[in-house]
Each structure stands twice: as structure tokens, then as C-alpha cells.
Image 1 (cartoon, rainbow, N blue to C red):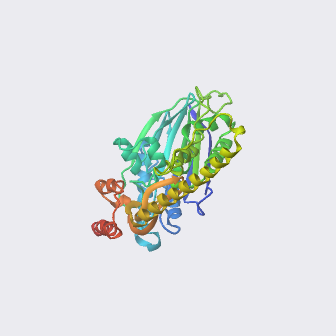
Image 2 (image 1 turned 90 degrees about the vertical axis):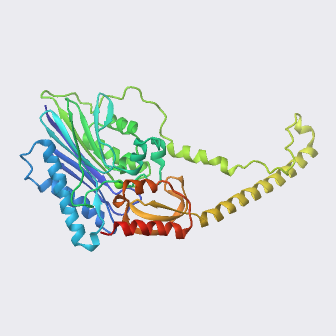
Image 3 (image 1 turned 180 degrees about the vertical axis):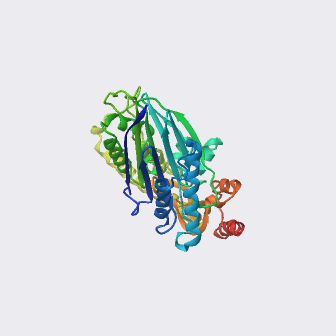
Length: 401
Ligand code: CA
């Protein structure tokens, strides 16, 4: 068994100006890193991690699991030191998902919400567990995967490199067979492209370069809301393999492309309120309408009255809702993992459009909170601004050493 082709690609996406992702294509060692932090700190963190993977050879003689562990710890140390010594970089961090192919196994090292997948026999299997708030809640049964996908705080991670002197690294290893394809990616891919679609794209590509390009393209046409990075490598037998990258998936269902539209349709009943009780009942449409032009006219008048009443009702609802929104606050965390006081209610009307806005952004990272406190970030209890601020002040006071 030997390593076949490999390919990597990263893209800023369609919304973010900077690309804070980085990747390593240093066969037989591969990695993706998704950095976070204010200003340019996210880029710094992911690049330091990538550099550690390329440069740190002191671990080369170790067993694969220990070797991956040692490199990730070294990357963590470098980022942590930099964050401590450089105030511009304070609070920065990065995810890392790495894979090392040795003999008949692939060893995975993982921190954060980037992912590793193995594609075999037309099936895709996730090899890592996300270290994220929504993944925690899914594991404890408090959130379904659909709810997690749509959750405003889905990108808040609970473990990262650079926040502490030591980091807890998940390491695991899986066997490989000729034809296995491995994918490492940042969440910019998996939040935009469903696993079935990833599989379909891989099956449709004739080279790994093309596959990487098409995956990035799919993330961008799905919204491109985040930086997207993919690394692919393939394991081959000693004899020449057939040309296809992936066996076609067993049964491809035609649905599943319209998740965003679903969200919109779900919301539509709000815009079509029940008729106000005081209004007269709508006349049933009688047969032979065309023979009674006068009644028709009157009916149109009635419909107009109805429309006006309905509009007034909607305006009242909206006004009430806006008034409510302006007085409601809750504590949560933003994309960069900072603890935030939001004004409004914790719902997204659709991808990227929420009924809330930031009122106070703390320097405190959600990952610095205790597990109980992090869980509280999901309660989204609506309170006054003063109460929300007071709660964040308590968190901040506790976090100061
Ligand atoms: Ca990301």
C-alpha cells in the first residue's frame, strides 16, 4: 500500500475579506487549520500551526500517535507564546485536524471543528468529533443535527490551539485499504455543503485537484460564508488502480439541495395572519360569477377592505415584535468565540440574517468558560441589558487569573 495523489486548496469565500485558514500538504503528513481572533490574529495562529507541521522534525522518530500529538503540542506552544508576548495577537487560536499515513494506517490528530473524513466504497465517514458548543449539545441530546446546522452559534468552538499552555488533542487511527480517499476540511466546507453532496462531487471528479476545486466552488455557491479549505489524499494498492476517484454512492436522492429555501418557506405563515375576528366572514366563491358583475364589484371592495385590515394587523404584529426586540437582550457568543451581549431574540430569519445585533463584545472567549457556563450561553434567556451585562462581568471577573 502506498500514498497516491494528494491535493489542497483554500479560499477566502464570498463574505470574509481575509482567509484565516491554512493547510499542510507535506506527504505523508497533512493538516488543515482554521484560525480565529481579532485583526489579523486568526491568520497568524493558523500559519504558525501549519509551520510547526512542516518544520518540527524532532518528533519524526516517535510512534505515529505520539508524533502527531507532539507536533500539535508544539504548534500549540508556539501560538500560546506568541499570543502572550504580542498584544495584537492576544486571544488568538486555531483549530487543527491532521492526518499521517504510515504503513497500513492513518493517524488523526484533532482539536476544534475542522474535520477528517474517510471515503470508501462510495460512503463517507467522519473520523473526528467536533469540539463545538452545538456538537456538545447534540451529543447530550439537546439539539438535533438540523437544529445544530441552523444554530446562530454553530461556529463557536470549545477547544482550540493557543488558548492554554497545553492542549487536549484527540488522536485516533484507522486502517486503510487501496482506493481509500481521505478529506480534511475546515467548517467553511461542511457548513455550506452537505456530506451527500461532498460525496457526489468527489465521485464526479477525475483528479484530486479537480475535486478540491469543485468542493471549494460548491461551498461558494452554497453561500461561501466562511473561509473554506480542503485537503485530499488517496491510498493506492501496489498495483495500478482504476481511474475513478470514488465509487458512486449507493443511492443518490435528488432532494437535499434546498435547505435554505425550506427555512424561508417555514417562516411564511408569519406573513399571512389569520383574519381579525371583527371582520365579516369571507363569502364563499359562488358558481356563475360572470353573470353577476355587480356582486363581483362589491366583493372586490370587500377584498380591499380585507387587505387593509390584514395589513394593519401585520403592522401591529411587526410593531409589537420590534418593540419587544428592542427591549430584549441575551448573552451568547459570536463567530470568533467572544462572549457577547445581544439585543433582540436568538433567531436567524435565514442564513446570516438574525433578529439580533451585538451590543457588547467581551474580550473573553467562550472557550475560557467552564462547561456549565458554556451551556448557559445556549439558554438565551431574555433579560434586560443591565442583567445581561452583569452576567458577562461575572464571567470576566472569574476569567482573570
Ligand atoms: Ca471557519
